[in-house]
Image 1: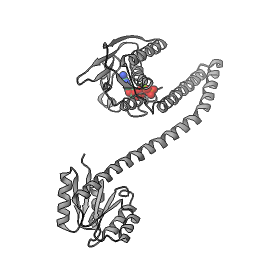
Image 2 (image 1 turned 90 degrees about the vertical axis):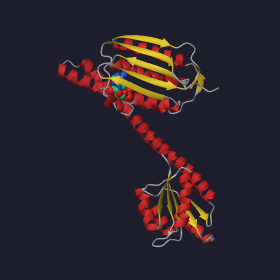
Image 3 (image 1 turned 180 degrees about the vertical axis):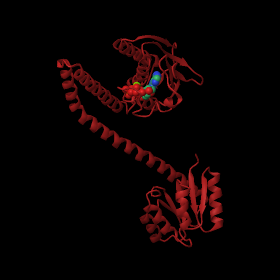
Image 4 (image 1 turned 120 degrees about the vertical axis):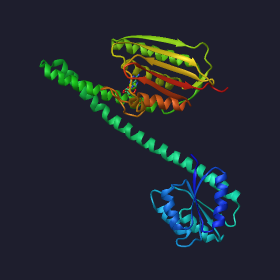
Length: 354
Ligand SMILES: Nc1ncnc2c1ncn2[C@@H]1O[C@H](COP(=O)(O)OP(=O)(O)OP(=O)(O)O)[C@@H](O)[C@H]1O
Ligand SMILES: [Mg+2]
């Protein structure tokens, strides 16, 4: 999407020159001829940046700037003021009211274009930082809650197990069983939150994708055994794959979470196929196919959302974690599924550039 710029000037000629220049540079332009119009367009056009003249009829540039900076929805839009008089008070006034930059008139279009570019770059970085801070704050909160819940949960689970063992009334035993299962569900969720915290940093080093996949497959055999299902696992690894940059532990988690879902999708008997295959354009694919219950298109669409689960004991975080890891590796993930038939999940990775 093109970055949007709102240019505000009552001088038609200046406006036309400015607009033409910035459009040539690949921006989407909207114009306003005075402060009042500028305020309306700042909301309706939702620009990434405003360039505004100071001397204008109706409402001058400084007043418009003050309004822009006092409203929540327009506060973060950077503004460049075009000031006709180069007096120092003017500039100070502009900065005090919150202009991000000012340019003296007469200005060169080249200069305006360079300042626009640098301000937009800065704004993109700021937005990213704000998002990161939000995620970090949320993470800390979730972590705090998880920590507080853990001890009481252990107590509830332990006591419920004791009740279950000593109770003779079948109805009461059912109740205790119910508590135990709910506790296990919450414990699985806490485990996932820990896992999420661990994967937040991926340290990439060159390695063999087959090694990760076969290790994850080994872990898969262990959980199949514990579940008492009859599942055949077919492993097919391409010979001598080109090295990829990966974080061994995180990538193993990413693959394992997919395998875990495959086991859970198979009710009693089925097949899970794990392959590493070369694809066009030097891409390496890890493909996992199961003959499990499958999903509708609607279910597939929500599969990576956090806390999206159709299982009683599911936290709905397994694939959220996998997605994040694959993204950190610069890869892609694709899900194909048919209800009642089965599911194929493909992770695509690009070989390490040496
Ligand atoms: N192979 C699959 N076959 C059928 N449904 C699947 C498959 N993989 C994922 N799903 C669906 O996507 C949902 C989300 O999966 P995800 O792994 O993120 O969470 P979960 O398995 O429910 O819980 P957990 O966090 O414990 O892994 C699952 O609840 C399930 O409905
Ligand atoms: Mg899962």
